Amino acid sequence: NARLSPRMAVIGASPTAEISNKLRALASGGAKVINLGEGELDFPTPEHICEAGIAAIRAGDTKYTAVSGTAALKAAIARKFERENGLRYPASGIIAGTGAKQLIFNAFLATLGEGDEVIVPAPYWVSYPDMIRLAGATPVILPCRAKDGWKLTSEALAEALTPRTRWVILNSPNNPTGAVYTNQEFAALEKVLLPHDVLIMADDIYEHIVHDGSFAAPATAMPALFDRILTINGVSKGYSMTGWRLGYAGGPEWLIRAMDVLQSQSTSNPSTISQAAAIAALDGDMAFLSGWKEILLSRRDRVLEAIGKMPGLSALATPGAFYVFADCTGLYGARTPKGEELTSDLDVAGYILDAAHVGMVHGSAFGMPGHLRIAYAIDDDKLAEALSRVGDALARLQ
Ligand code: PLP
Image 1 (cartoon, protein in one colour):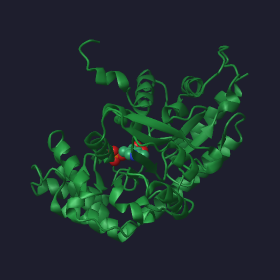
Image 2 (tube, protein in one colour):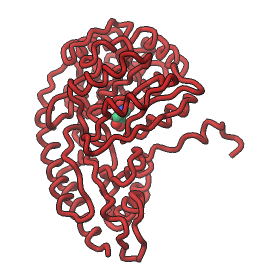
Image 3 (cartoon, protein in one colour):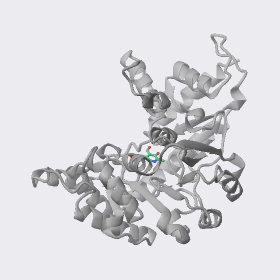
């Protein structure tokens, strides 16, 4: 369409949102669909957090604030960084925005241009490459291997760095693989990065969802690079607040200032109600989390067990987040009851959608064909039903 900017030609709609749209269309036709494609917890936002949002509305806390968030919110974010990560950011090194997503976008838009490269380890969160392209730069996709636990190795990183590299993205726990990097692994990457003048985007959004091992923040684990690390986080995943749209970042003041300027000309401050709720989340007791993690772990194990029994699928145990990333290449060559041959992860996901009315995201969307991402943060009964339907659908393949 000639009315659209050429900018639109380099990006596509988020594949996870597309799966949800397809499922909604099936559901509106009466099908009982189950979505294992959505990256959010099914738990309600904890009561004390909701109360803080309601109190903000009642107190008339409903007007513009500073673009980068209220002083009270920034103080709560600073306390969180210090308490949980041992990181010290001044208020001028902190910004809140409308979800972690907006902050990542602002950071790229503020720093990237034609000819710049960003190293994106794959599998990656679906939005990084398109955001990089929108900013005029080139995503350099660096495939990681299952045998390395889906983690970027220092050797692969060293090979991929060029004089054009402006950013390296690190996302632990990882979406979609659930990989969690250790302090030692970050230290090895730090050594490689030290002589290169590159920025590091630490997307720590799944910090609180770690089942095996423990979370390490890149900004803590790579102290020599602290001045070049933008730590991205938010309340979406750890507090089940995806719809509140509140993310935050800590980083070098020059970068935070530029992100603030961009935000001032686009969305302005994040919702005041969400800011108030986020203060309650960050300062409040996280006792609810252990119960959530227990439930998530049992769901993860249920998914792994079910996959273990499905011929053609296999998966590693995922240490973090709420995804299982399953290899589906064992199904290639099989034929559906209609006689169609499965030749790609898209075919497999499409067959599962049609035959079982269960939505999963194909690995190609994350830069890793041959896989399916199964988001298991849904109600236990629905999860059991979904797995049983998928098992039945796969059993019908020839
Ligand atoms: N980063 C990763 C790796 C994610 O998976 C997501 C959400 O799916 C985000 C960032 C964005 O989170 P938010 O809801 O805070 O925008």
